[in-house]
Length: 115
Image: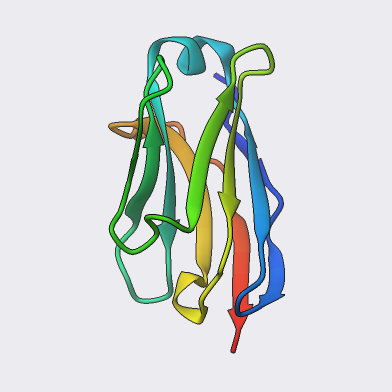
């Protein structure tokens, strides 16, 4: 199967914004809830936001009110709008189904927030 392709990361100052995109496999996208995960150096990968196939969203406490997940069903694409970024948001961000599929990890996109 085709792996997801994440993009949109970069270096930003604290308080700034980034918008991440994830192009997914239609077969995965259509039947699963999708999630954005992140992994910081020395830490476990964590789910930061999820969106169901019907558009219901949930967020980790650390990002609630600052991040917004959305999906474009016509493009099989998931987005993560990140506002008011903090240095602790620095991580590699990945998208996957929720719960994740072991063989469906992409390369991720690096987000670095400077103080």
